[in-house]
Image (cartoon, rainbow, N blue to C red; front, side, top):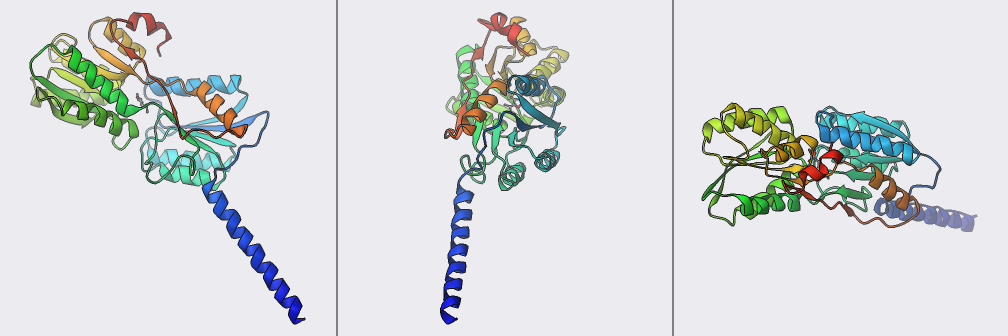
Length: 328
Ligand code: GYE
């Protein structure tokens, strides 16, 4: 009797040990994706107020057909809190895999962690979260997107090569506060400019990646800095807004103010052709086919690199006409 009891407790102890071992292992390894003919895929878009976002959502919808996805999409209408609850509702609907463009770096960590806890492999697309807290290969599978620091650096280098004046008076229009592209595009550009005494960033303010806000912020900044001769916008929509504000104030964008931007939208390429914008460093929204490919590799059991890096082109007056037909 005594012996039996000892054995039982040994077994219980062994069982609880192996449960601990199992849960430790699963806390470190990612949820697997079983092979299936059709996957239920969630794409939780952050907003749809600009051509870039609309092109990205369309790219996922087009891919759903090509890749045989049962696709659920949501639109958080510019609210990080809604984007988190959109992910919650996708988890409740039993998605197999999540593609998430996190609007801001910190608030969306919650969504990543909840998908992880629900055993759903998550891929971050186009923007990232705070990498010190949520980690690729542990909490989410991978980040798919551009090198935003490099984009800012290339915008700065093009400016240095093409600015004709003696002293650059720069206004910077930042993207959404707390978003990875705004943080990194600022760092890339500002670090290069800091090494050049003839270049001064006189104002740097958020226009939330939006055309209208870009125009309004530019109108205000123009009052304080009428001598501006370079505008660096973190995306094309704000650059177009800035062009409108400058023209309204009687300035000549492209002639007396150099406009430097990022994305490669149709309106931006047209502005380059019209001589109003100098450059836009590409940041492509067409993530659907890449998402299909990476997800397939993951389901095949391949180890996915933590950063699936997208390579960007650069659009100037040399090639804008050549690429405008494929722009969005
Ligand atoms: O540049 C901007 C969009 O996250 C890379 O977000 C993306 C950026 C893109 O709203 O236009």
